[in-house]
Amino acid sequence: MMEMPTPVLPAQVFQQRLLDWFDAHGRHDLPWHGQRSAYRVWVSEIMLQQTQVTTVITYFERFMSRFPEVNSLAEAEQDEVLHLWTGLGYYARARHLHKAADVIVREHDGELPMELEALAALPGIGRSTAGAIIAQSSGGRAVILDGNVKRSLTRLHAVEGWPGRPVVERRLWALAEYYTPDHRLADYTQAMMDLGALLCRRGKPDCPRCPFHDVCLAHAQGEERRFPESRPSKPLPIRTTVMLLLQDAQGRVLLEQRPSSGLWGGLWSLPQFDDRAALCAWLDSHAPSAELEAAWPDFTHVFSHFRLEVSPQPARVEALDSVGEARRWFDTRAPGSIGLASPVKALLERLGSFEQPPS
Image (tube, rainbow, N blue to C red):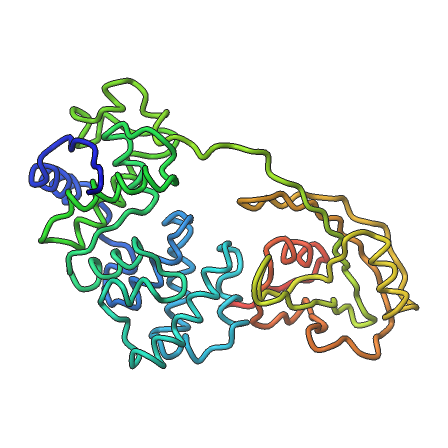
């Protein structure tokens, strides 16, 4: 049987306290609240993974305007989906969203399945996200355990250990299951997320305003910031790359599409090389008349699991006979709807005439 920490309150008392606080102080006017279709909730939940609500709102509204239902998303080109995601980060989410839309149309008649197992089996949707979609869109009883909920439950019960460890995560799932009610599921799941986002914040928890400050074990110990425990740290590895900013006589920039998986999967990027010798060898082979310009300063782009040190190298060429299937000339004055990696977009903007079209 799954080991569960001793609850700080009986389930019904916990639920009532939380919902009373939510009714008075929770978020009730987010864009996906107005029309709680499974599709809108799904898109919002994917966007909200590792991203703050204030950042997501603009992206969500723009995304919904272009893809108002799952069929339009499934029929879209991946480039356009990634274009609307540019700047939101964690681009695998967009690729999974697009892929899942195709599965929903082909295998589920264009409707998101409301069975937990079937929903969680779709690309990019795990157990907690599936629970949120079900609870928020249909009011069905489903349990969630996103980052906000993990943090709140960990502090309330002073759960030792990094929540990413399976044994710790099982304890938190057991608590989440215990507290989840059979009624007002949409409000309850939103309330749990709001509790972590608005009060039980990562850096500065607002304990005096918390409806559970009198029973929170971490607060009683004066150790709110010790919980949850951080992932065992190790130095981020460093990778290096040289990016080629090759412009032709018309001022267009050569881009290449990244492989569908891996770093910036499916996005358009500048040609990348392991070092300047490899870049020069490529130019000798493909653009022998190209002239290198003064290198731009190096900069570092930080990912969750490594640091990428980028060395931008501008160059000019009159023309290329062929750019290949995975490359294209990019006109910064009329960029079109393609997905760009954030640091690449920043480099293109530095060229001076980049005009991102309205989406």
